[in-house]
Amino acid sequence: MAGGAGFLGSHLCDALIAEGAHVLCLDSFLTGRQRNIQHLARDPRFDLVEADVCDPLPTTLERARVDAVFNLACAASPPHYQADPEHTLMTCVLGTRHLLRLAERSGARFLQASTSEVYGDPEMHPQREDYRGCVNPTGPRACYDEGKRAAEALAFDFLRAGRVEARVARIFNTYGPRMRADDGRVVSNVVTQALTGQDITLYGDGRQTRSFCYVDDLISGLLRLAAVEQRPPGPVNLGNPVEMTVAELARRVLAITGSRSNLVRRPLPVDDPQRRRPDIGLARRLLAWEPQTPLENGLKATIAWFADECRWAELERPAANDDAGQRRVLVTGLRARD
Image 1 (cartoon, one colour):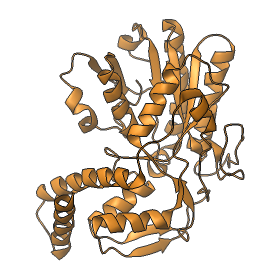
Image 2 (image 1 turned 120 degrees about the horizontal axis):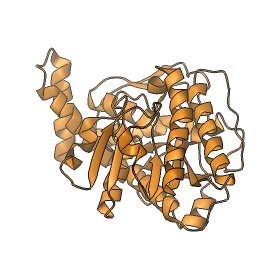
Image 3 (image 1 turned 180 degrees about the vertical axis):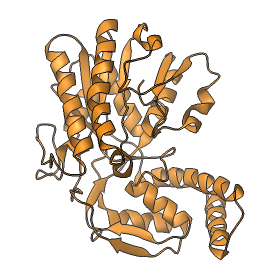
Image 4 (image 1 turned 180 degrees about the horizontal axis):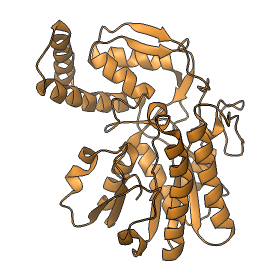
């Protein structure tokens, strides 16, 4: 499992161990966090290898014989993947190559975590797997968008050559506990701003759309894709087909938290997609999978988790002004209602 200490990776580690698997977790902790996997530290079925997937794999992994390789290694939010675009691109290319070769040596099935970003700012709506996308190959998001496209190409080249049984999941906006507050994604931004009483930032006019999938549903889809015997015809979209505007998401978060935060608008980032919604017909047919968690339930679980994060952050530092007191009231009020 590459990227096993990240948001999605740590949940996938939990799910695999719950199924009785022994997990080798590889992570550089560039964006992954120790706290995401600290509850697994004493589990005899969990081993952590701290290394960068861009580098040749450590001897521990080179000699390992594994049944499945999951590649979830890569910063996945714009502020993080744009911080070092060269490393982001090489993670997708060199890292994927290293892991494909590991799967080849072991005769293991390989699952590549790709992204809806391969569709860019799509001209087809909703997005089907046969849509080739509208990506700016030289823009500020290209290190991630084109990196993931290259990773898909490598996976399918190994598959066509009979070297690896590869599967590719195109993951749409996923949210839930263990997201980083500083990852710059819309759910984490809106929730943390609401909980701390800050203005909630909407980029553009707020009418751009996303489709939000709760993390437990997404992990279920990844496991089904990795296990299904019938080989998919290509990549498989995994996401929630329920589409909403970013402004509507903000309103729902405000209603759940009871926050009095104001909505403020900022310029839309370059190449930010206007509409995003998966066509999951293939996942329904092939995997008998579709999301089960209503947005309201998923948001409440996510907000409660972030509330705990905020509460511990407040306990670790003294209140400097009245705003800090307001933050504590917001968090306490949320927890009491839950």
